[in-house]
Image (cartoon, rainbow, N blue to C red):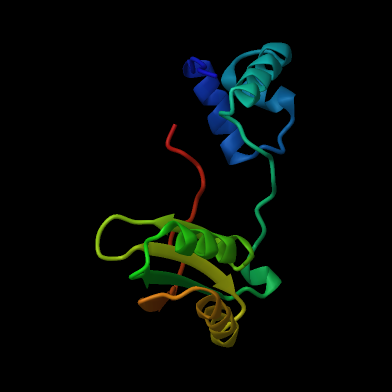
Amino acid sequence: MNVRIDATDRKILAALQRDADRSLDDIAAEVGSSKTPVWNRIRKLRAAGVIGRTTVMLDAQALGFDACFFVLIRTSEHDADWQRRFLTALHARPEVQEAHRLAGDIDYILKVRVANARAYDIFYQALISEVKVHTVTALLSMEEIKSTIALPL
């Protein structure tokens, strides 16, 4: 479904990105509208798929996930069966926070969040036991400088 997004919709979306737990009254006041029109716009944006599911952001380090690895994968396999097995393996592993298929020399990049290097090795050994990869390079993030899921509205 196509939906036209105007300036008020963008303000609502920006407010929701900052804190979706705020009251409808707060959001309406911020965007200069009243509660009912804001609620109707949010419903319209949900129905159109602009707004997806609502969740909470957890603090990885507070929960003991101190290590973040970016994993670069090259494969010599590109057939449909390999891709199916690879995607199944990725979806089965909650450690994989993001996975992207790339253009260029590297085929895939994964963002993997684990407790420590030993936990990464367990993840790595399990992954390569399920799918054949040509090369794997793991890069440990020393410091997270910026992380956001917010879009630049």
